[in-house]
Length: 329
Ligand code: NCD
Image 1 (cartoon, helix red, strand yellow):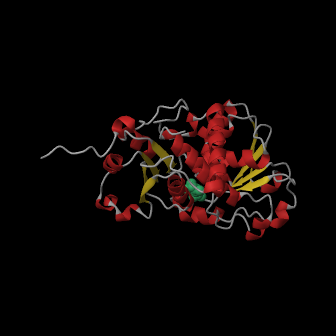
Image 2 (image 1 turned 90 degrees about the vertical axis):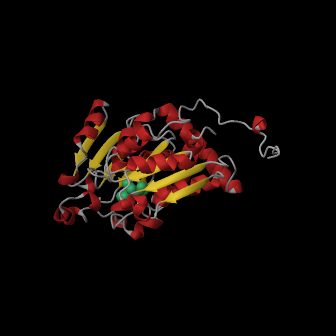
Image 3 (image 1 turned 120 degrees about the vertical axis):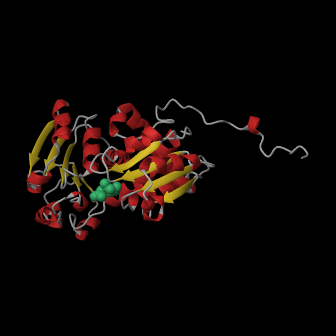
C-alpha cells in the first residue's frame, strides 16, 4: 500500500490539560469532595456558563468529547440537563436514559461490565442507580470520571451543587441563613447531599418530617458534629415564619417496602398560598422535583417559588462540572 497522507496533524493539537481545579479527571461521587473553595470555583464557572448561554447559546469547548448517560431509574431533569449541558458545550451523548430495559442490562449484564463497555466509547459516565454505593462501584471499574446522578437513598451530589448554587444566587449569600428541609428526609438523597454541603457554611438547619421519615442518624450525627444550630419538628408551621429557604421534597414511594406506610405519610405536607402568607418576604421555596402534590400549583406564581429557576441552574452547574472533570475549565 502506498504511504497515506496523515489525516490529522497531531503535533499541532493540544492534548487535554491537567487543570488545577482539583476536579480534572476526578469522579464526582459525593458532596464530601467539595469544600468552600471548590464550591466557589464551580459556582463561578456556572455563572460563566449562564452568561455564555444567554449570549450565544453554546460553544465548542467540549467538541469531540462523548458523555455516556446510564440511568437505571427514571429521570427527567437530571438526564436532560446533563444532555443539554454536553450539547451546549459542543460534545455529544450516549443516552441510555429511557430505561436500561432496552440495553443489555435486561439480558443480565452486570453494572461492572456495562461500565467497562461504556468507558470504551466515552470520556465520562453519568450514572443513576437504585443501590446505595453503586456510583463508587462504577468508579472502581471505570478509568474515566464517573458522575453520581443518584445512588438509591444515598447521595445526589450534582443536585446538591445546583441546590446550593440556587440558594446563593437567589438570596445572595449562604452564611447566616436558616434552611428548613421538609418531607422525606429519610429516603431523599437530595436531602442527604444538600445537608452535608451546607455544613461548609454558617447555617441553621430545621428538619420537618413525619416520624417515620426523619433524617437518618448518620447524617444527623454529621450535623451535630459540625455544631450547627439544628431542630427537628413534624410541623411546617413551626418553621415557616423564620425560614430563608424552604426545601420541599417528595415522599420517595419507590423506597418503601411497605406501601401502606407510604399511604399514611404521602399527603403529610402541602405548601399552600395561605401558608406562604406566613413566610418572610425575602425567602425561597425550592424542590428538586418531581412534585406530586407537596406544593400547590397556586404557589408557582409567587416570586419566592424558585423551583423552575433551580431546574435551569442544573444545566449551568452540570456544564461547569463537565468542563472541569474533562480538563477544559
Ligand atoms: C430527585 C431524585 O431523583 O433524587 N430528582 C431529581 O434528581 N431532581 C428527587 C426525587 O425523585 O424526588
